[in-house]
Amino acid sequence: QVQVGESGGGLVQPGGSLRLSCAASGSIASIDAMGWYRQAPGKQRELVAVITRAGSPTYADSVKGRFTISRDNAKSTVYLQMNSLKPEDTAVYYCLVDDQIKIATRRYWGQGTQVTVSL
Image (cartoon, rainbow, N blue to C red; front, side):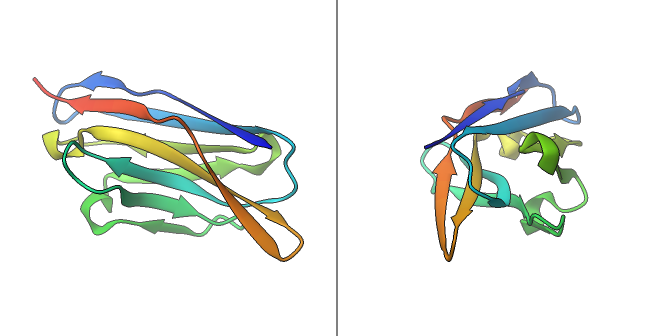
């Protein structure tokens, strides 16, 4: 079993910055993709950014140019640097970790961390 722990959420004013961190631990086989989704009240969970083991990122159009995803494979950790935050970025942010065992991949989720952008 893989445990996923997030940190770094909080309250920030519009235009501000936050950095989220997410670390995987436990019985890890081989971590493939890592990333972040978010869910705002009354909305479906949506992709924010994901990054492959090789470091190739994919971003939602709504965060391109403002958010940067990175990872440290040695620490099994993924980061999300969020700049120029907007009220519409307010959501619970969930970390995902894809653990690859032979030809199968299992996705694990964190418990979520709240990000609130408000005056």
